[in-house]
Image 1 (cartoon, rainbow, N blue to C red):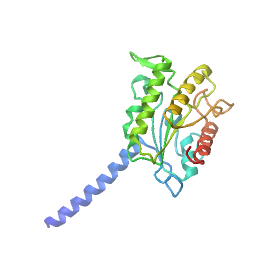
Image 2: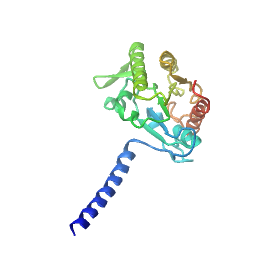
Image 3: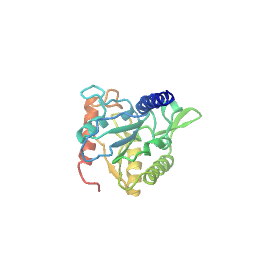
Image 4: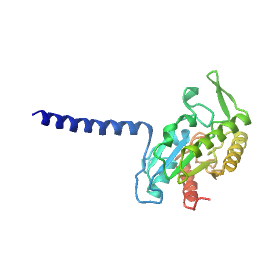
Length: 232
């Protein structure tokens, strides 16, 4: 009788662990469907609201650029994104985190690791409010994070740095921040993918910043084109 109870307890604990594991995974990541594509260990995206605000619902108005990419390559996609965040700016009204705080993104190394961000790094948080960030502050944060990614990920992981997707607003900041990120990626020997022109066309953002479905599709197409080529 005691053996029967112990076996029943073991089965119950295993079932609970499975349910809890599924709930925890669902809190932090979104996933496209895994398959037999060229990236068997999946894709990880660290990003801002251009990643965080969107879903993996095929055909939906809010289908994310990363969803288009994952479905094209039949690859699982895990996202670690927060609105308002960046390389050096905290998200969620200066109470959130920066990219480097998301250490869990480096666990279970993927086939591809994509950094989508920089759009918010024109400013930084100081005393709970946003002030304009200096070029030096942005550069230090970008270089530091890219080096962290190289240290934490194996050589087999393809690291891709997206030029920050920019809509119609703030063209000067677009040139400034994009130049800093492009230069930093080049100096660190990482693959840089330009997104210039993806979101600044009519109908591709709903507020000058965040992509419509057409904008997400255009951004996804740029990433698909890059990942369809051998790593440089």
